[in-house]
Image (tube, rainbow over all chains, first blue to last red; front, side, top):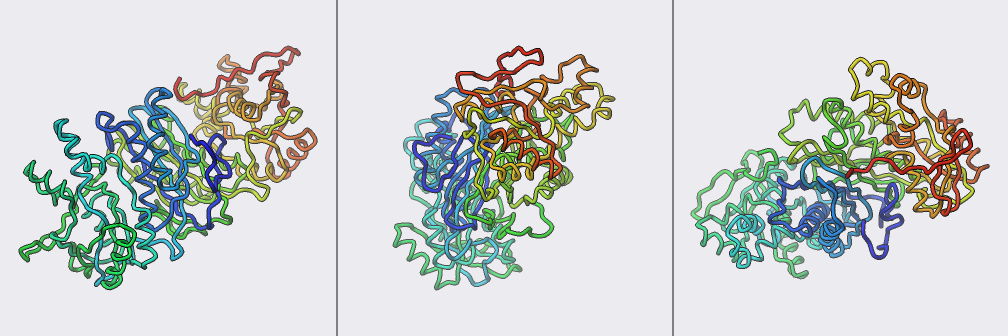
Length: 315
Length: 315
């Protein structure tokens, strides 16, 4: 929609009936995600630039979760009323910023009217890693479960956005994690090259996303609560507000970190490989037989059902 | 989202973070279009199956307008409330019907909640013709302008949908043209192989879509009003309602026929080639120098500005 110079691969950019992109291979990863005002975001807490950023980031993250390299994207934007030029510029500035960081130029899209509120749908196309796409369905009992970064920051950030204004500056990193998530493109590629068995991004919440992996792999899982990585800021927010930060980590969602599984030695190697790229990751549990269900192991040695309390769009 | 057997090219279908499709070439045509309830359709006149059909057809038509072959599509669906299984089945039945007719399997998508009303966004990916994508920007003064099929049927159908119920059966073909447009995939490929200079589908209306071609090619145009192809049903509707059918033909939009330009002899050859495939097409005017503007030539020899009165999403 906006582009200063044609990026590599762009044969036909915005302005025609469709765009044409030349991919490195003819196997292409394709994904689409939508965000709606009043459902996924509100314009009293998100700037238009944040909306553009997050809409692109969320779809790019799906390609990262396959171990792929995003190549280009298209944006379909719907607005209730005619936009000002400044509105479009603001929204596109965020979209362009993250699309450039991810080497994923915006090559087309459309603009139309919606009945109520803004809707933004981003399609991302990308290339697989040389070892192929990493699926959700290949986790095996005995695999270790790993995760990149820290969990719950986005959920904590959303909580802060609903709290008194002065908290926003003190918990700026959590707010940023919520408004401007950074898809783990490089980490996904490193993990694919390490041969992890299954991978998924944390969009709905660890519990829900792990449930996808378990359902599609025909397995169960055990998560060690004490091993779930949480940031100092999130723990501090928990103490200040009397809330359990683990709830944000397990079911806050929208962290866009990567969950991955691999045989134990391979998972250790993968974590070491990520460290070599400056990405923190850690083991948080094990893949079990399906009959074991989904469990969390408490610090005191007890266990509980891992409740699939992640985001349901219709609750 | 629904698929009985994996179609050729589908490496990873619905259900993972993203889909993977193997294209015939690594140059891929990509397009996205959205339809919103209350803006593009209403559920008192469209069945859910019509909505699914039309959303896919509209995006497929963009690939047809480049002379390409659609290969696969993704559907992002947003609903105000939780859908029943029957709702999803109905919507998908129309989407599947046209996607199968166009050999364009549905390989992925997402489902989420909207604030108000239904929103449906369809991404279509396809392959170029061996001669490359046909753009809007290559029309040249002296070219003849051609169009496939008849124009105005969709606009007439929309008028009928807002008229007393009994008219719907009498003008069934016009209603069908509005609810279930058929993208001109084969015609687009024939025209690309004939070396037409520019092409676009009729989505916003002949006047507006021709304006795109003229703007992007840096030309003007003249349309012979008497040559604009209209169906018998549309003329009959005009007589019955006292309306000028030409208004529907010039600015009704959503016909999803193809407008194309080529040097006069080449255009004659293209029309003959289309006839060989059972597709009617005719010449309707000429590409002129930009200074000539956009004109309609009246039957009495007079001329008028061709008013760009096509659909504006924000009017």
